[in-house]
Length: 419
Image (cartoon, rainbow, N blue to C red; front, side, top):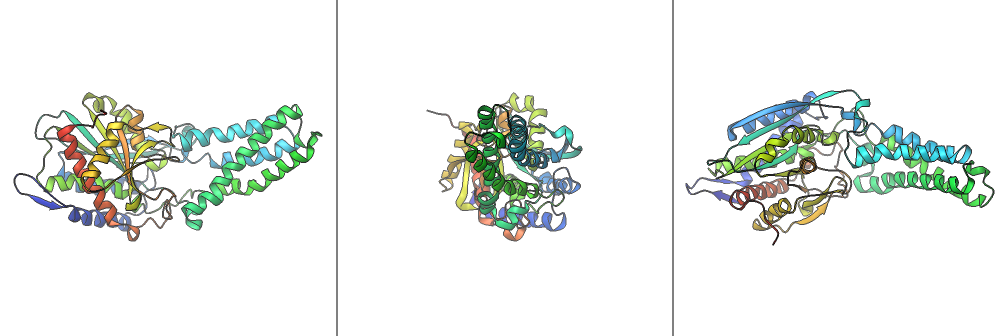
């Protein structure tokens, strides 16, 4: 694709794709994995700031405080509560077992599924950063588009590395959650039938309760395996997830600048957030700190997260483990821009997890997510295989093209409106 303005300046999306792949490779090879709130995360942002400075009016790096292990640090506690409840229910008290199950579920739901900062205070503090680049329009600033991707990379998920994303989900993750659910129901039944007595002492339907206890024991190893769900020290290269998202934003801004295309009334803001993999902490910190500014003029946010699997490229309709509805106009801005570029994108949902757009949507900023990733999840997801050799430039190229079109459409027409 070529883009041009009335002065005849042209640039190719392919050139900016090649540039993006080169820069991603340099970061992975020379800086390395970038766990949330690490010096490497900041070093990568300083690297990207050098790419953003010539094509924007202002760049800045803001710091914020986080507790990076809060997001997944509950896992050992949840595992102990879940497995312990199976045996407490059989030998001692279903009431105590039921309470243990609830305690197991609370951080799992609030931290891992809802991204609440529920147990963060229990873990050490770190300092993380957000990189922000701003490009003003040539006229009065009347609206703003924010493109946000995250610069950090996740701690490795060894089970995904060993089994692959889909097999890990079906053979380990789902059975572990099912086991906890069974134990919870088992305890609740025993409370009512046995009037608080241990399950082994309930004479009526004793065979039934024994069978449930055995089933709980069968699922216990799956629950125990969650202890090894995530490495606590080793993070991954994060080439696709999510340096690709950062460089889709950078590449789109660079393509516009090289073509001599200035927005008439739209400020473009590119954010390379920190600590997304620790529960959207960077995007949350930025959206909270800049809420008034973001709402002073109409603003739309596009969360750019992982561009590798072109066949799965989609606009995200729902986010935050399926609990958050994204803005209608923001979704159709990307869908319509993609259609203009020859792509028929589907609306998809993030049923487990979230992208940075969710943090902005929660603050009342019209937002949507945009990605190209196998939702199975892919075999490279949160493993050492997410390296530069595993990049697919065609997905990055398509995303840059679509974001260039989206910026131009938004500048001319604003957000699409329902009829």
